[in-house]
Length: 279
Ligand SMILES: [Fe+2]
Image (tube, rainbow, N blue to C red; front, side, top):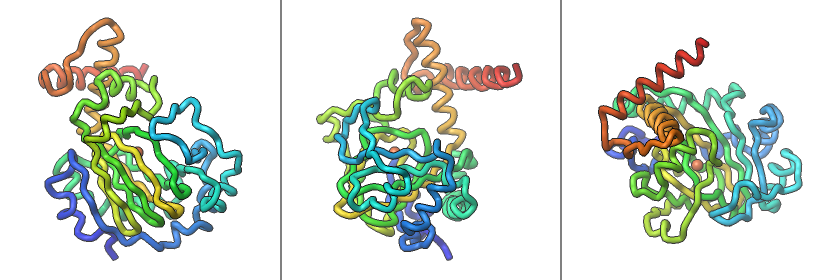
């Protein structure tokens, strides 16, 4: 049985640059019951479970994100009242969830491959969060489809091409020297499109499109399936190369302003990475 309703039509014309809404039938699947999620959290290594208090502002300083003082299991079991946000990362480490990820991505593979090449680095995440929790303003390097399983979310998404994030911020992000949360300014919100997501709804989130998220009045469970592509990996390589240029006092042009230079830098970065691995 298919998971997505006519996914090719849903993302046609939008992928990879624009958000797109889809419908899925994973809501109510036993893989996402609270009991299954407690089991899953226990199977994952501690480094794959991130959680904290959920009542935080959209511009939360990541260095000061408050903990919720509970164990992982307590946090999942008490998610309705414990005012928390939890991410189970790389859930494809557990075979049942690897299977779910593959089933979903197989349905998107045709149109995605046609636009951005074969899918690479396929990963899955589950977000479990209390009523009213906020995920602060940030961006991600992957193509992402967020599938709402339980509860509701208001997903505020911003265009990737409006200059809300400076080139320096993009470069620092890929260099690993910056936290994924971004500085949010109230005037950015004029550029946001808010998507209400209920069980059965899904949203394609383009690579590096900034977003912040607020839960509705019920506990929320979301399943996020992500992949990289030649296109997204080349963008990351260019940002890293530009980071090095800037660190040496250079002033790299914005991506796209000098396509030949960009292409040459991406190739040089690929070669340097390969040589570095062999050394
Ligand atoms: Fe995100």
